[in-house]
Image (cartoon, rainbow, N blue to C red):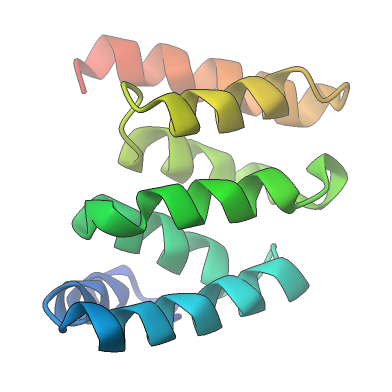
Length: 123
């Protein structure tokens, strides 16, 4: 699931999304633990992509994203989060508002730009 290759990561996320809830929960827990320790690593994209493909994990992913210190959020991966996560979900909106209000200009700018692109795309 943590492949740097998008096609491999998305295929893995589809496979995990198809697992029984118990098995999926164990994998999600492990993934979020890695995300917490290495937020700039491949677990960031994997968590976002999995939340896009298995909406039942979205609350746990958003909760973990809120726990990451804003200065550790990988700015270059923020656009992916904005484009993949459902903006209508209150937990997602809270994450993006948290990042925009973090006082870290690069992070706030990345979120604002990605949200503008998302609005233009109609997603």
